[in-house]
Image (cartoon, rainbow, N blue to C red; front, side, top):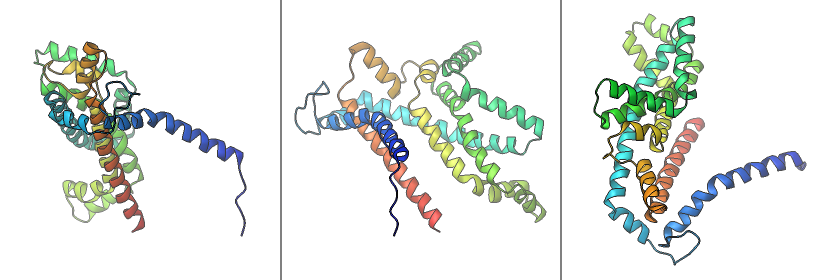
Length: 266
């Protein structure tokens, strides 16, 4: 039985990764720990308590911002996933020159500065006389997230056998039937990844939200910015909100990994 040789390079690489993970997650862990004490200053421990969670769920302003944030995120993710998936399929089956042009155009919003997109949308809405409301906010988030859905779906289309669509048509399926019965099941993991990515991008967006919303419509990002500007510090109950959002994201990640593992074992 041979023993694995110690590799200094491998050890240093793992150590480097662990340090990076610690730096990334240490602030989140700190907020989670101090969400169980009602101190206003992180570093002072006033004893274990759930008071911050009680105040969180009784704070109507924060809870309304929380509901608004998820309403925008879910709505924009649904629209972006539908349009982005159809766009990715259209680009994939286009001719070579048209495909190259459309791929380049779809990548521009990803590389472009978000402030440019926000300003462009604001100028557009003002020029056509549109009132800033939930619709303008939704359009802004859809513009932000659609390119990422295209980027998520396109690799699955490239991995797919390009002949199965034509084979379905030869066997008598209509184009619509072939699309939903053959192509969509093949690219479903990419569609789901694009949907989750759209929600994530929408949840933490501030710039486009600030430029395209009605001032009375608060999301978590605009609420946090507004409170910080006025008070200079964040309400302690937001530490509890951070813990809730982190646990929700962690639960989704665990479920996705379990489902992926079950599919690989089949």
